[in-house]
Length: 103
Image 1 (tube, helix red, strand yellow):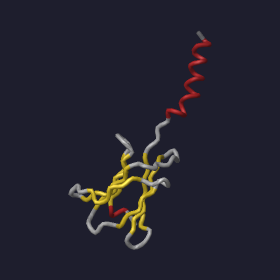
Image 2 (cartoon, rainbow, N blue to C red; image 1 turned 135 degrees about the vertical axis):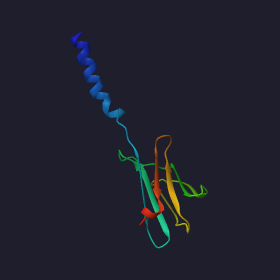
Image 3 (spheres, rainbow, N blue to C red; image 1 turned 90 degrees about the vertical axis):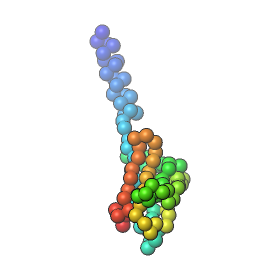
Image 4 (tube, rainbow, N blue to C red; image 1 turned 30 degrees about the vertical axis):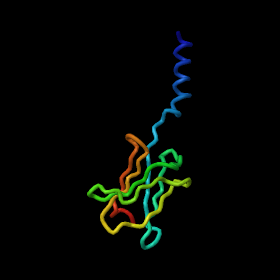
């Protein structure tokens, strides 16, 4: 019985790091007067190539439909209207960035 409990305890500690949650991260910044560059990934440091990154107006029109490139970035012309950026890596894995926080 003690061996079984000890084995179970060791197994939990060995496999616990693999089960740790990671969350999406996305940052956007102005790289010049009219171009925004967004970089997406995950809190564990992993990249997110191919993940959806859309630029959406407040009336829900998609202004830029995109995906992160192989370097996990996407650049686009800053829209004239108010917008937000949606990084969408799947259910429960989204980040929204408001236009007024992009400097």
